[in-house]
Length: 550
Image (cartoon, rainbow, N blue to C red; front, side):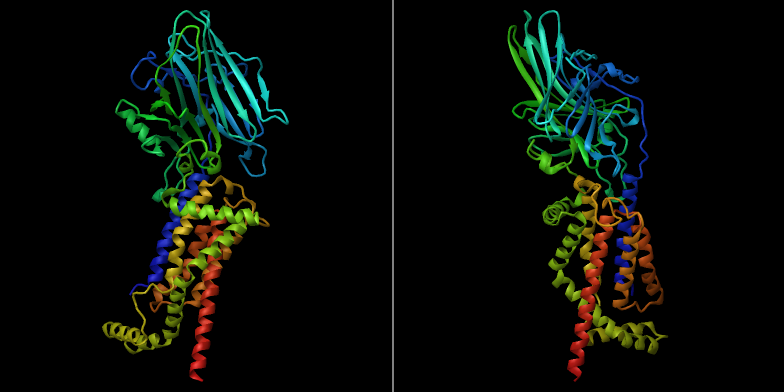
């Protein structure tokens, strides 16, 4: 009979390999630099029926000259705005270095090489500022803006005019310590004719790090939308490709909502006015994936003015930042298919962190709480393993007696189980390990998706819980803890299976070498607690047996 614990170890080994494979895909990417690509709007008239803003115009391969850029610096963002169209072509997250202890900020939006990723918005009309296949040229009173000390807001105004008297002011309003900023259009129609046009907002991105791993353990990279019917819906790059093959993009009409591009830890989101109906769309052109929205035609009579706008968020995937902005944005932090457990796990982990002030200690205390919650359940398994250990001499004697008759050996073994009131179908010592699996995977997703744990230090040499232990101390300790666990439990009666079990700690240690330190820390502490519990139960049973004999 195959040892059930061996089967469970193999299962966990497969899961560990799948997680390791996914981790390597997410963290082993070599980021390439690419030539600038800029896609401008191409639409029909303002009254066209479908998908106007999704039709990309010819790309521009040359780098955008500095003379066209307006630089904006706040306490959390460095932004570059292209005066053609007023698009956000650069956004650096100043509080999130690309590499730990380095000054280089994470580049979220960029127009360079294969990592093209920009946020666009505009007004499409026959008389501007944006036209079919061409964006308008804005002007600004200065080239550099900075949020001044003691100030909470920073306004950046771009101006577009035409000879007939139409004036459009595109205003960006940045706020201290905020990653969301308003993008408003004031349309003043000083001409003799009504202005008719459409507002659109879209995010354009190349597919540069969205490879899928085994069992979908990778974090999601791709687009997402929200509508009244579905608060959060993923529109993957592959889906966009499928829509494009059918000669149309994704099209959906809904009131309110938002569009986003998300990746591990960070995202960008356009959030329009929630009291209006928009057409949501996707498009694929020249290797650029677009997700966007446009509203119905707006008319500004001669001599009148109106304001149209939206909010752009470009920053970390922190639920507390996102949830107040729009319905469904709290779902956008990707915790995979175990999101319910992962969300609860991270919620409690954050509460512990607020008390202890260290994510490593928070993980340790969280592990202890999980063990306490399942103590009674695992206690029965530990007692079963202790009793099985006591029976090993009798089982060995049966094996020697019926060495040449496997059928009699099996019958005698079953009789022994019956006599000692042991259920052979019981998982025995496997249950505590089985309980750990969903929490293990949930913590993996939290480490992959929670930006709060990115570059989070623990103690001594472990400066980043989301990266592997540079000296491999934790994986080795974890492997030794597995060896200690096995010595407290009975060995398999089958010599081959016993040898395989002895080899398992080596296999797991190798798998865990490149795992995030936070994940290895959780498994190591869980093993230690299981060892303490098994040792205590073994000692208690032995003491009870000694008292009973006397």
